[in-house]
Structure formats: C-alpha cells, structure tokens
Length: 419
Image 1 (tube, rainbow, N blue to C red):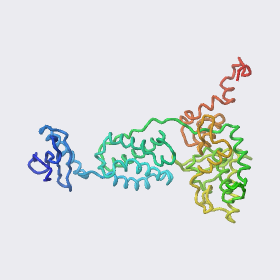
Image 2: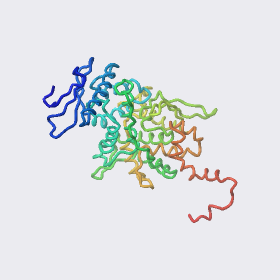
Image 3: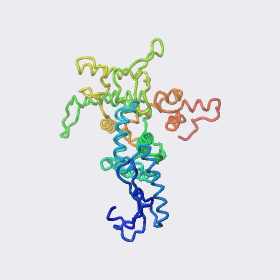
Image 4: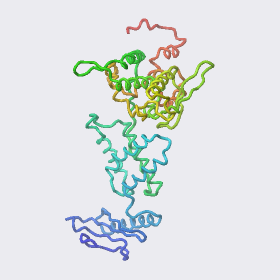
C-alpha cells in the first residue's frame, strides 16, 4: 500500500479492488481506486470522482469487471501507450497503403506525429476520450508547422481535415488490434472551398509567350552585370515544360512528381491522330490521363534535352521531371513563384497569389465546356460533384455555354448592355 493511501477499503477482501483517499491532497474527500487483475502485471489507479463511499465502491467494482474482461480477452491492464500504437500504425500503413505514394504515407505519419503524438505521448490509448480528440484538433489548429516562417496564422480547413482523417485512421487501426473498444469520430471542420486562382485565356497566352524569352534570358547580377548560368537555364527549361504539361493534363503536382518514362503511352484518336497517355498514381489511386493535343511535344522536348545531357537515352525508370542526377524534382514551387513575379501574373484579379495548383484549375476551367463533365472528372481523378462545386462558375461565364443555354431565345442583344 502506498504511504499516500488513507482509509483503505478492500471491497472484496481479496486485494483486487482497493478504494482509498489520498493523504497527499489536503481537503480532498474523493475516493480513489487501485485495481489488479489476475493474469496481468501491474495495477490500475484512477479516481472514482465520488466522495460518497458506497458510490465509489460501485464505480470501482464496475471498473474491475471491465478490466477483468479486457485482460481475459488478451488486452492489457494499463492499456497500450499511444506512442507505441503510433509506431505500429506507421509500420502498418507502409504495408497496407500500397496504392498511395511514399510521400503521401510520409505525410500521414507527420500529421499524426506533429499533433496527436505531441498531445497524447504515452497516454494509454484506451483512456483517450472524445473530449481529448477535440483537444488534439484544437492543438492542430493552433500549432501549424513552420507558421513562424510562412506567416500563416492557422491551417486551412483542408489541411485540418487531412490531419483529422490521418488521426482517425490510426484509431481505426487500434480498434482492429483491440486496443480500444469504442471508435470515436475525430472532429474535423467543414471543407471551405477555396480553389487556387486559374489563368484566363489572355493570361495563359501571356504566360506561355513570356516563358519563351524567359527561359533563355541572361541572369542579372546584383552589380548590374549579366551572365549566362547553365544551372538556372536548365531549371527554367524544365519548369517551362512542366507548366505546359500540367496545364494541358490537369494532373496533380504530387502525381506528376513520380511519373517515369515507362509511365507514358499513346492512345489512337483517329487514323492520323494520337494523344499522349500518362499513367499516374496519386491520392485517388492509379489512373491514366489523356493529355491535350500538343502535350507530346513538351514531353519530347524534355526527352531530347535529357538525351543530350546524358549522352544517351534516359532510362525507362528515370523520372521525367528530374534533376541532373536523375532523382525526381521534389518541388517547383520556388521557381514557379519566381516565374509568376517576373511575368507579372503572381497576383490574380481577386487578390489571391497563384501557386502550381493554379495550373490544374486552369485545365479544368478551360475544358469544362468542351468535355462531358463525367469524362473530365475521370481524367482529373476527382468527382463530378467536385468539378461542379469548384468550376461550375466557369460554365456560365463561357460564351459557348451562354449561347447554348439561351438557344431559341433571340430577344434582346448583348450590344445594348452598358458594359
């Protein structure tokens, strides 16, 4: 018996269920409990939260029965520490989630590591309550990684939802392993639709026209002198082709990152017409994407450049958008921002800053009135609902749509409109 245990009462007389009051907490009349279960090592301590002895005894006995059956079914008296469950879960997703990229699996681990693991640490996972899950999501909202560098006050609803779903996946794993009996739902915010700004047709023309000169432009030194930098020219050339491919396929940034030469094929449209077919593996699984006419030319430019750079044809297993060592280029975000600033297209008309994902949105807005929406959704690896929610506005503002939807109604003329 601990020296802090006062007024100890052995409820069953066998030493298994002991209630006591704490001598180290002045003026505290609450009863606490110490439980041991045959077949399990260690003991379980908890507060009954009751000052009435009879009520405390009933709660203690109910808890003993719960722990008894838990141990009988192979569980642990103490409960599995969250930190240990996290390690097991990390190993599990590496084996089970083979339909997503390694980067996505790493992202799942990091989301839980930077939030739930920091909050729960070694707390037994079966003692985590719905209130605790609410607390951990509050922690996630207030502790955005690198917020001191990016000046982001709090993560977006999309980021918080991704974090919540990752934590939920861990608890589903714990339920499967019988570490917990009840699966609580991790509270996530409602998704706030905030698509990146796209490029209008005029802006897109301005961008690809600007890139033609920008790629081969000399670099201006801080002293005012200009010089040719092969490394920068290579980066700009690859970025140019990347921008053109992304805007003509609608592929996600993370999906294109992992595309290799062996993932390219062709689909015959007619006797004299073919389209580039790209196999990608991303957040929605594997799919084949058909590129717009001309996309094959941008890929061919990269192939010819890389062949000359290597002095031989690149390996089928090499990543298309790669560094000189053949490893995939992890991100074009920095160079894309530089391109946006140099071209004067960084800030859209609504005040938002453009990002690489603006290229996917540009593809969608330009194709939504030219392709059946179901086919467009398949090609982009998303749902018809998402297409309608994010890009439906582009339909009504398109001249073809406006003409079609008002066909047969010839009254009035746009010429009389004051704008």
